[in-house]
Image (cartoon, rainbow, N blue to C red; front, side, top):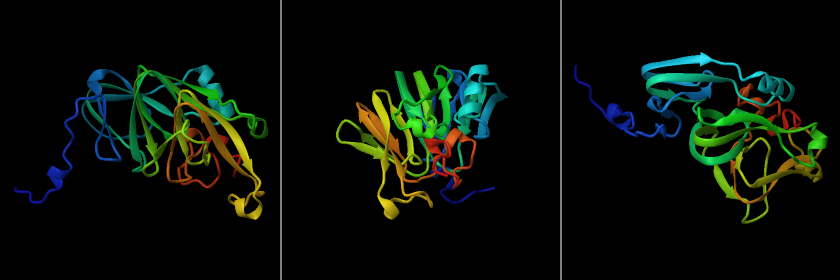
Length: 241
């Protein structure tokens, strides 16, 4: 049997030997020979070799935090040998390598990370947090790879270059050294957000580092709702719903 056309050449598996690499813009390829990998439950779209998946608890402390905050991510541990392919709703995949560093990520955007990376749910320190009852995010710290998903191609803004603001439902992550606070825009009818009271909450960033913003207001809290949910969310966990 002879096959004609470019399908099987244009979309061949990439030859990268890195632990994490992109297979196109919307799929992550993981080389399992580097050790176990934490990945979002249900994100496996294919694999070759002997790869096994185990749904593991996040520990009592983290489970309590998830229950209280609604923030977090439902994870499974992938082990074995071969190549693993991950994706999430055909969203774009962004790969980051941390070297003894830390990023703060919305739980809904986490796709996978090396088992060498430590994760936890932490409260964001913001004066506006008193109005929201607290804001929470997922911290990823250490040395290793992290993959996040974005709804479209994002922009990485250098917060040291100018005052920087983002819609809570569009902010994906920020790097260590970046501070975050809340700003309320009381612009009247022109600033109403989804039938709200006319007060638009914005995230204000300062310090040194980058904030990653996607071109869609679809980030939701905790990674437990569908990205198309209109019930508010993001880091504000339903405040704007």
